[in-house]
Length: 176
Length: 176
Image 1: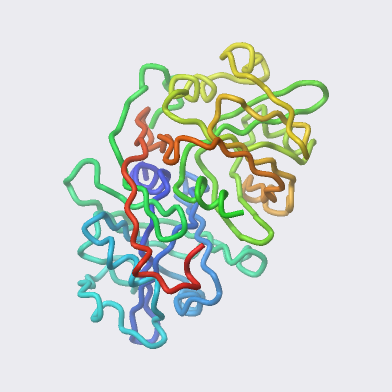
Image 2: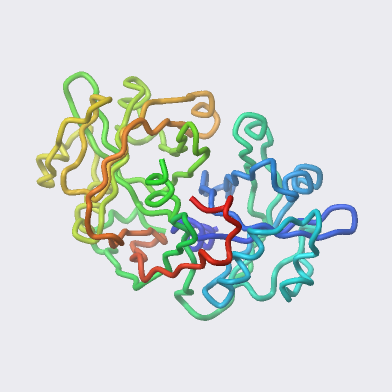
């Protein structure tokens, strides 16, 4: 699952989609962390105030979708309304596509989508931290370096810039 | 602690410094997550193979230092040697400065330094996840948008790019 490191470790804002009892929802999330490579584990801090919290806790699944600057306004609008009163897929023109391993939908307009099953709910009570296993990854073939959004608070995002390689300075076992 | 969100939520590589029994050490780390604003809690996934793991577990303190592209080669070299055999501050010309609330040193060459005390070790056993409280923040007055490093695996870093504001699309209570 090098795609998980490739796209999530740099710390982008993501859109987390969920499905429960015939309804789909999506939330904007910036508080996530890679925890393990094999199995591929990712921690998501989902505040209880989110409508998605109950849907994800009940369904024990989600999809982590990676938006780019093409979706900047949509990312903000998703984060500023509630799935309790808004069908966000319809309201924001997002296209839900069937996932292969979970009921939560992929978002077609995103660069990458990671299907996740709940691995461990033990940290939810204390920190609202869900530990998910990524069971299937979908990544668009281009662009190679998508312009991801990184939230800095106060309504401001940093956009992913250039890339630089220091591969020659790494010990072989540290790469990958 | 809006400085914690400002600098850590975008997902940069950080240098974690520690001090135990008269020795200081520093490690490169990319797996961190903001968990709470008040108190200001941050989770750090510190793999047990790191020399820093034992020092931080014993001292229950660390400093999270934020490097920029001025330190790219140093960041990589720190991550590719061990504090068990190398005095990294001396080897890489880093300047340790006294912190105010912890014994671990600040790194003068970094843009920001966050002094941390261990808040919760309960997640260390299962996930090597240390939950720290940021008790003191030091941030350089300029530049306003430092060129932080974001690791994508395989020896390649994404460098922080331009910033864009969508403040006008946020509900007031979502800002800050």
